Structure formats: C-alpha cells, structure tokens
Amino acid sequence: MSGAEVTEQRRRDSAASKVALLDAARDLFAERGYDRTTVRDIAGRAGVNQALLFRYFGSKEALFAAVIARSGREHLAEIPSDQVFARILRGILGKEQQGDHTVQIMLRSTGEDTVAKEINEQLGQDYIRTLAGLTSQPDRDLRAHLVLAWIIGIDIVRSVARTDPLASADSDDVMACVLPAVRALLEDVRDIPGT
Image 1 (cartoon, rainbow, N blue to C red):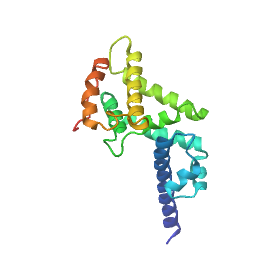
Image 2 (tube, rainbow, N blue to C red):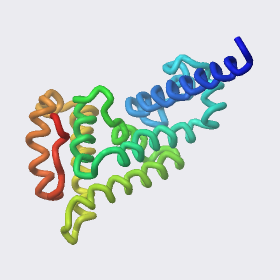
Image 3 (cartoon, one colour):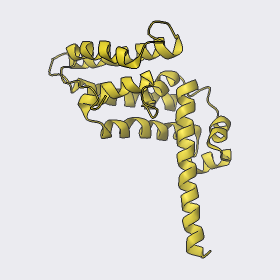
C-alpha cells in the first residue's frame, strides 16, 4: 500500500469513527440525557477508544453540540417548514427508525450542564422561529410555544411516564388526532408526504 493509500484509509477510518461517535452519542443522549451519559458509554457503544472522542471533539460538551447541530439545525434546514411539526411528532412516536431525536435529547438534557442548556435554548428558539413562521396570527410566538409544549408533553407521557392509552396508541392514530388540532394554531402545517 502506498503512502497516499494509507492516508486515504486513515481519513476513511477517521470519518467512520466520527460518525459512529455522533450516532452513539445521539442515541445515548436521547435515552439518558446529557448528565447521565458518560464518554466511556459513548465510546463503548461506538466501538472505539474513548481517547478518540477527545481527539475528534475535544470534550463531551463539544460532542453534544455536534450532535445537536447535526440532529437539529441540519434537520430544520432540510425539511420544508410546513412539515417540521409532523416530522418531529413522527420521530417521537417512533414511526421512523431514523426519527428526529433532537427533542428527546433536549428534553433529557434540560437544565443540566451550562453548555448543554445554552445549546438547548438556542435550538429551541430555532424551532420556535420555524413553527411561528407557519401562521400569520399576531400571537404567533405564543402559538409556536404551545405547539412545542404539546410535542414535549406527548413525548413525556408516551416515553417517560408511559401512561396509556397514549403510550400504546398507534402512531397514525395519534397523528390523526394531533395534526388537525395543530392546524388550528398554525394554519400552514402539513402532513409528511407519503405517510
């Protein structure tokens, strides 16, 4: 193997390790929250040495920021604004295997580390801005906050408290009940095409 081939192999391994760390951190932050997730747990789930986490990201806080950026801001940038609510709700309801874990990460990390809290507040404002843009009503920020609060409440009842009938309800049934009500607050909300 030539020197150029060795360098290219290292780049591929490095990129794969970074993705594995981001994926593992995303899943663990969503399951446990920021405070209860250790760098050892993240590295173990990623199948890499924890020294690589520090080499690539510098700290747990920086890794958290990278996870939020990838799961949140990129997600918001990729999805049409009128589908953001439906996608978030689908992710929470577990309909999509690769669902958006951003809200779960934010919920389980609220009020903990200062860096995590600041990132949560900034991303929360990004969601509020996006949702508020879906109505022309003068109280659009209040409406967006109410919709986001509903998402948080659904997640808490379904995945944290696990209270029935919501915990065991079919995702499509929940969507069918919630989307029309959200449209009363945000007129421009749409379903996800093809669902």
